[in-house]
Length: 398
Image (cartoon, rainbow, N blue to C red):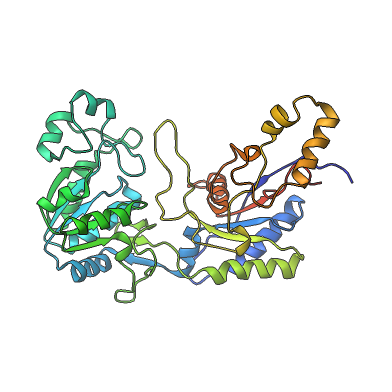
């Protein structure tokens, strides 16, 4: 058998523009098969078909408005003074949510992390915090004190003054705004005992700390829009987490109830091409930008829905470890054959073994989802479906 010269390949698959009510099982299946025919490649067992969460939610019509959010927030908080703490700095991810929250209460005490938000968006340069002799772990700063120390800093990439922007959004909804800066959740309890904590990956700890410190009512973003309001979309598992701006008055929520979708596509590909593929819905990748220090993952998870073959972590040997240690005296064909033999007889679980040290200890869905997010991009590529081939191959596969 001829030796294969190509390993993992990631292809963006062009699809029609998706609208509410579209049959995604049919559209995704047809688009992948058409791409294979057009570009002259064949599907193989264990290929991965990944669908961006945005088209899944769009096909579901999973949207809600500022008014929907306001009604839910007012019902769940009482609509008085509410602390809104640890939001990320994002027009796309949080601005419309903030408008909804502010429209449902009389006053918002907005508490921002500093020097950056949870996903790494810089509010103020950390060196300036050091120069000001401020301890971000303990010091609570008022709006006035923050301005006195740091002025009105702007986001290094977007140029936004998020403090002023969020303040204007709150006041534009008819609510009073008070802004403070702190990193200890309980700091907000000096202002109000009703809190919405807006952090994503640390939300359970934040809620626990607030309740232990005496808060009367604590909601996370995944407690808001968990059921339909006047016919709106909703997400029972994640609420507003994972939402994106759709219009100036509406957000697209994270997709819901999509296990039948991924399993349906898997079944259709098996029927049409005779191949057992894996299928996943993916959102943000899970990686950090070393320049801007932004951690990409603003969704609650990378993949909310996936077929069973994508559960788990990689089980791989580190080729350079074998080459530099176990087989350091071999070269050429002898080295290749020795490494191939090691791969063929590797254990089903390499956890803790030196030969696997340095392989990426992350979930398969997080790794593949990150690859897909980078492949599909976030702009005008028009490839909301990604086909990944060869991901589960190793050095011995032909």
